[in-house]
Image 1 (cartoon, rainbow, N blue to C red):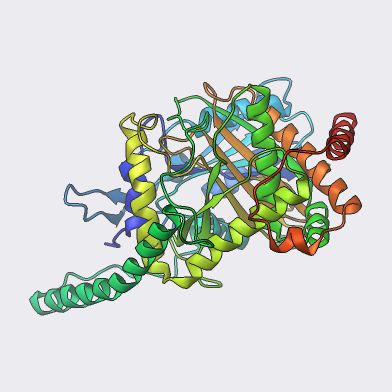
Image 2 (cartoon, rainbow, N blue to C red; image 1 turned 90 degrees about the vertical axis):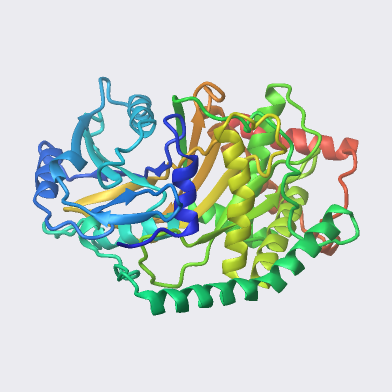
Length: 493
């Protein structure tokens, strides 16, 4: 039976009925006029006939009190995992979001393979929605994206297509039961491997201590120094969801003019939206928010059924900063984190991330998230998808909205997915903590307006570009006038 790695096991350790650990991507399909009436039914019937089901979609967890968790293959009843549903009248996006939130908040049955697929019709615009629930112990975002791309065709004339459960994983063959000699050799090699990590671990610890004592700069964020915020609450069972779709070209133009990356612009826009959301509620933080940013270490083209990423902590910005100044500081913080991760082996940083985040998640699991220092405030992740049109059984895929999981101790997750020239932001929150999550989407759209206007009207100085570590100064009267104009433009737009 295939064995779970450390990261996979962590998701089961922190999972509860209030914090199910599954990811839930949503695709919107636009059938043509000729096939629109019965498309949902034909798609459902087609999926029920897609046998056999390959690994890992025929795996269920076999958990052990010793921590030696494994996967075992079981027969799959497709009529249980593939389901039909409908949006209630009047069939608008608000009703769809309510349905998705209810489906997302329900844990998967651990006695079966950990996935479900819903075909949802009833939308007033004639679209059909495909909604999947897949446990995070099986897939990370990049791995799931590579699976998903295999089932999308490039042209609409494909009535016969292959769903993702018929693409077997290419890694991790079932493990043979080892004999005594093999067991001894494996134990020795494992110990040797751990001993090789010890010098790296000591160097990482020394660098973090230096940063904590203020004697070393240019080192990644020290864990457990994030401010306790509205977003650091273990979620109740209810969910709230909102999405925002913007042209990919818009973000690329901002990044090109500002000398930043796509991820830098996304992080900065999220930072601006989050700070505005807190300000509107008269919540003040003494330190900037800290984002947990998953970074993939998966090899190109690798189709593995496990998690292949490391955790990176990125400290955002605070204060009344001009948009480009904020962008430069976020860019520097993200670059520092990425360089720090590259400085060490992926194996060490993954173990370090699991240890740090594991402590925070366990604290949230037992209700101590308000008493233990926070390692991060929320997760913001970006997943790149295909940039050309794709189809499912002849229907064009018009939107792919990401909806990730809410771990213990965190009530908000923001995930972006770029597809077919668009970028979709998915905001998943705890309904009790963030009932008005649609405001975050509106604030993020306004933040992109401000960044866009600043990139067009304010040239970047070398001083701002290479000295983003300076503390923000109070805004001058001239700066306030420019910022007010920028805010006015967002309100009018």
